[in-house]
Length: 229
Image (cartoon, rainbow, N blue to C red; front, side, top):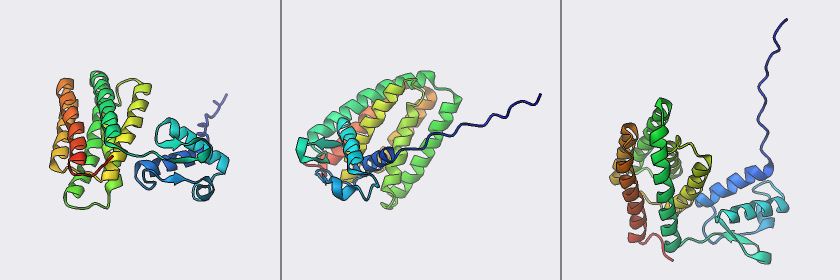
């Protein structure tokens, strides 16, 4: 008897609401919707191809993630930025990422190492372009930055931890995009050292480098007056 052919099941198509959620979230993180912008339902339904009721659901979802502020009957606006919140986000990112690094370094295998190396290669190439003065690829640079840090912790074994880190990382990223921060060779060196620590499974040194990496970014942003309360 001929064996039945196994046909792979197709992934369910994304709903218009999910597509709009991802697009609006991206537009907030990468600065297309600037801090404080009032989100008018009627004027945004056409650009995002969804109804007013769907937009309201999306904005409530983003409000739960603190990317949007809900004002009751007055509507929604993009969450403002401040030095206090930036420091809170930075502290939470360090806490989550340091914990995830430890677990990932302990569990990571050869495939994980390959993913980390590949992610660093893409980031380092983009950093070289930024170093040369090409600021037209800021979004790609920060996307690869996120992919590299995500790869470092990808073997931690906790989906909840990964999701929490991704959300707080996007808040941190939003501040960098608002300020268009690029620290140059120092940041490149820190990323390279994090890669070396991953391959050597040196968690303690990696956590020290990470703490300095995050703090330097915060101080560079604030020290250059790129963010004001």
